[in-house]
Image 1: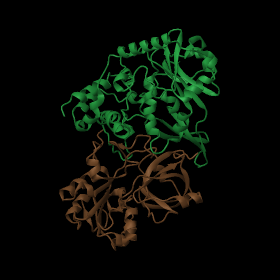
Image 2: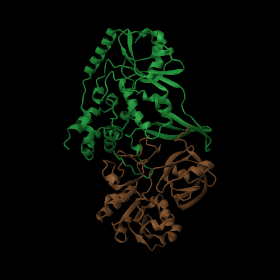
Image 3: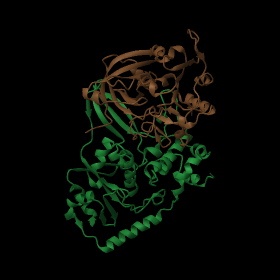
Image 4: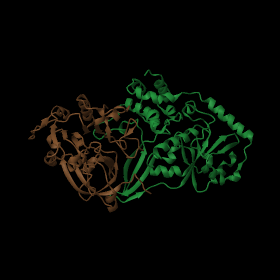
Length: 335
Length: 281
């Protein structure tokens, strides 16, 4: 199917009873926020700085409220359905990867509601960034994993591929706005997608990494890699597959709340005990944990690496620590 | 919906001051149905909340034979646990749990037990000790080695006489000055030279500061114990208790789920944060 770009606003407006989130600038930061004017959407520039997982796993989320000191608990479970528009294929894959954790043995109650009630409309990446390496991590600029609909920008219109039942439901309400895609449209989209994949210059074969990491536990590479790390945590904070959180209580006037908020294993407080004991006392241990968690422990549990090659940690690191460079070092190190 | 991250309400029935900075709180769920349903195993922990302050994992320190009331022994050292010092009978807390695996007492049936504890580490071992005292026929010889900074910091002192009727006990302190003390002085590992326990047919349960457990493991391995018979209870910062928040990972293991009790042969095969790594920052 095909959606003309001038009908995008109508298409989004035709989705009944759901809040549409899309990449929009808030200040200088591109993040997924509720779309009030489709004209504000920035789906064609670079990928959002804050990954769309923030819609189903908010940066800060109230878990419950209570009167100060008492236990009269009022739950704050989320409600309402959402559509995430303009999700890049890497970030959609990342959300499927994060699902493993939040649905592991017991469901996380908040994530379960938000995730079940969300639909993902993807946008194929036709102009990958310099640090993108999704094709090395099992994805690609037009990967459909985790998406309900995939759009490919054909200039005047989008080629619209419905991938799931949820995606079909979204289109039902906007049937009049869609037209049939010709085989030439499909061919054009395919060529654009292939061109984009070919444009991705950074590549690595990570298949040997999980097996190599345990043997490199005491390797000097961790000291070397982390030597310039400032411990700012941006690599993990804005990583689409990172899921660690902190839980805190906060009081305003008579009312208190317990909330959870994103956290990063790159912070020393992350593992610091009240006793003063810190199992990961320096950036060496924390960097080693970050890489082992993504490429060894996660694979051990879920048979998939917790990295989709979005390149955010490379783009955002203030001292140019580069995860691909780390992986090459892991790959080249004598065991 | 059943929200596993929301605590149940419990009332403080009694507070017992163990020493200057540690108290034992006897708790009871306010909901009668919850009191009936709740059960736990020795070595498991609950997430305890003081509403408006926060939540932390604390081991259960009472017998699992009595479920109506259960106790937590808390040292007042952190921002939350310091607030515990102000709690009194009648105050309300949040409790969710129990979490974790507990001590391998079933596997220890018919075997001897060596229990090695340091400081507050005796608290999670007390339910195991009660379990042994309540069913002595199930276990062989039981020996407890316990060390603390000074005699005043020893926990559960009023119970030792009763324990000693069935368990051989060796006590040691770092510094006994100012106390009337006729037991040992020095590290708990120094008691290995005095203990009766031998590697044959023995299960070892240990809890204390991580650096202590490291030396306990090292000392016992040197004495012919093998790693599969050594169990240690680890402590990690923790928020959710259900493998989501990521906080308590030790290598690929989660202390909240795979632990807190680990057989040392699991830890030594894990490319993990090896026990005994001390903070350097």
